[in-house]
Length: 317
Image 1 (tube, rainbow, N blue to C red):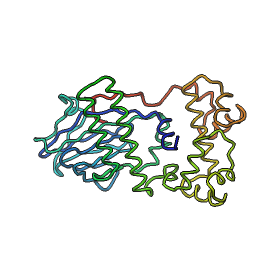
Image 2 (cartoon, one colour; image 1 turned 135 degrees about the vertical axis):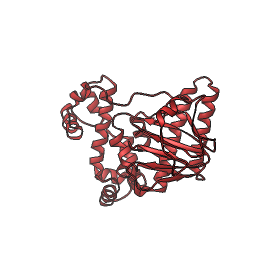
Image 3 (cartoon, helix red, strand yellow; image 1 turned 90 degrees about the horizontal axis):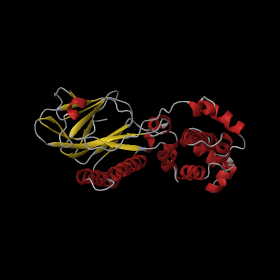
Image 4 (tube, rainbow, N blue to C red; image 1 turned 180 degrees about the horizontal axis):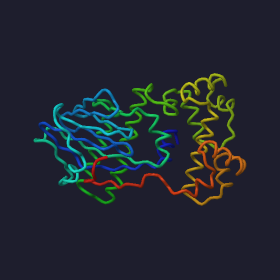
């Protein structure tokens, strides 16, 4: 798997759809901060997105989509003078999967949210800008809109396994949105996602993710990338913010942490599976990276987001 696929798989991405929002006239809706990633797509009309903590609002046209990656309260509005109403009561009154604001139906938005495991903020979300805007008319935006239309059809018709299909379609949408943003605005991401925008560093990251248990050296990784050791080290550090072996250590610890959460394998077996020759070597690295010994980490209550099934009338956020 490639690094983006690896991280999304490790974080156990789950999709949840909200009711659609139909609005017209003088309207504005105020949303609480989402715990994961919030998304909306403008299927008809236009509106403005205002996010707490960001100076500039974002004007959304028909066909636009956005991802809100941070835990920020936000407002969607069709009129600059309208007094915002709280989203939760509005969506609680949704009928047939549609919530309504203002008077009329000039604007239609569909959306929902993505939930992740408990390492998502450090591994992914904090490395992205607070808002990712996917304008209409780009190839990836067209795929996003296809996925949204397919989701709506699944939820309307409710064929066999429709929740599973809708959930996977939403994750397809998320993946395309991240691909598009990495291609369009690489300067706005940090850490390993920034490395994916550099072809040489992306090759190195892919090699590390393909075989994290391998006894990598910088020289060996440079040979795999067909460049000099110094070139790889400099490019990797500049793009990712840390050296290749430091990155590998942290990725191995993330894999070990997942296995501690998910299965009953011995610490020695987990150590071997992620490239450590002994239980003690893994324990030292694990405590250095995550701040607790592996045994304590395994015994602590799970703090990740509970899986949320896709529904047609779920409240926003």
